[in-house]
Image (cartoon, rainbow, N blue to C red; front, side, top):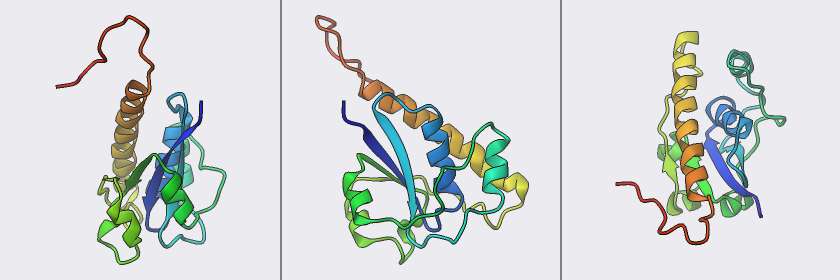
Length: 151
């Protein structure tokens, strides 16, 4: 089975998108993985991102903030932005493709409590995304009947 990719995008790839990548890859649905990138990547992760991930038992991804590329955009099965769609730095091509914008606050200017609130909101969204992808990619058993539908 080919691995499908979730692409998490924010401006600097120093907090929200890195946290989302770490959270998703900690327990990805079978056949899925996540990557993250920024439209204007920072030189390094936000100094609070690693420690606040470790508070919940996770580590930063093994890459520094990285620039969003056309290849990442094209190869992703699911594209999620953190709120960069209103920025001039967001590639026009990304705006024309199917994607979801989570419109999360940038935690960088927030105090630690605010940073944790963004982390927790992100964790809940990633949890729901993993469940949704696991359900949608589960093969039907022969003779099982029609797939489940959600009202």
